[in-house]
Structures are given as structure tokens and as C-alpha cells.
Image (cartoon, rainbow, N blue to C red):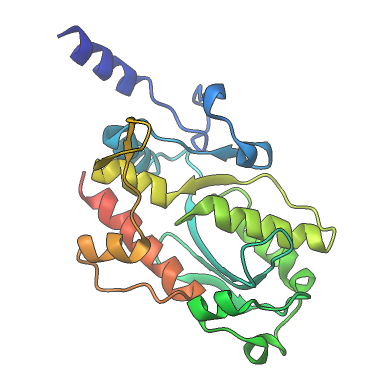
Length: 234
């Protein structure tokens, strides 16, 4: 009985960084590198916490979500974004563009998204689109599947051109969905953790009509659809 009451009290006290006027305070014990360059990086304790987070976007004081996906030249420290899409809460594309990088597209990256130098050679360089992209992401909650990768790569690309990258409110739908599914796996050290699911696995499990395609626009739309499927399950 005590544990149930403690859990209920904890849920009543949940607050979120994107909702103005609440007393949100991040858990300093779980801070990582991404916390040093974001305004907030959301972490969830349980499925109930995820559902409360989804509900919080209905508040009149909440920043609204946008859904982001990127494709890149690779995964290295010098890799750059070569395609970017931002979708709003209604599923409408706010921005979509290929981007011409200064580094070569690695064969392993091309094997994933199919993009080569031929596809991007006439696209704008990143500095040409940076300001417009940041205007769309600032004062929003940027949600992506594996957000730490997308935000890191976007920031890394901006740094390549010595451009200011603002601190963004960020949520990783991959980790939110892991808590939402509430499936645990045992690790080698004997501890248990929530199982992570690929975007295509999540979309298939939720029986969504749109399938991922490893291209920015389609995958941003998939993230949008998955977010709302989770939201509607409350």
C-alpha cells in the first residue's frame, strides 16, 4: 500500500521542462554529454511517466513538438548532415532539404540511405539553411527517434562552419517508446533495462500505415505517427 501511494504521489509531482510555470528540475545523477548543449533532454522513469509527458503537450503553457530526422555522411566526429526534415504536430513538413557537405559520404552511410554525391552536389551548403532551421527548432520540443544522434550531428555540422547552435529542448522518441512498451532485457552484468526498438519495429508493432524508409522526410513522418499513436493509447 505504501509503495502504491508513493508512486501515485510521485506521478502527481511530475513536471516537464517544456511546460512554462512548473517546477521542473532535472535529475543531476543522469546527466550526460547531450545535457551540456541542450536546454533539456527528457528522461522517463516509467510508462506512466511517458504518458504524462504526452499529455503535457495539451497544456496551454507547453511548447509544441516538432519531429526531426536527418541523414548524414556517416557517424564520425567530422560527419555532416546531408538531408534534414522537420514536421509539425499536424504532420505537415515545415522544412525539407538535401544538403551539400564538405566531407565525402561514406559507403556504409550510402548503403543505409542511398544518397551519393550525385544527389547532393546541387543542394545548398549548411550555412545557407542554418538560420531558417534554427528558427523552426527554437522554442519547440525537438523530438526524434534516437535524438542524441540527430541533435549531435546537427550541432556538429553547425560547428563545422563555426555557426552558433542554440540550446534546444529535446526528447528521444526511441527511449520514450522503450518505456512505453515496458519490455525488459537482462544485461551481461545481471541488471535489467528497457529494450530498445528500431523505428521499423515500433511502427510495425503499432500497425501504422507508414513504414520507415531511411530518408529524412519519411522517417520524420514515422516519428510523428508513432508519437500520436502512443498519445492516443492513454
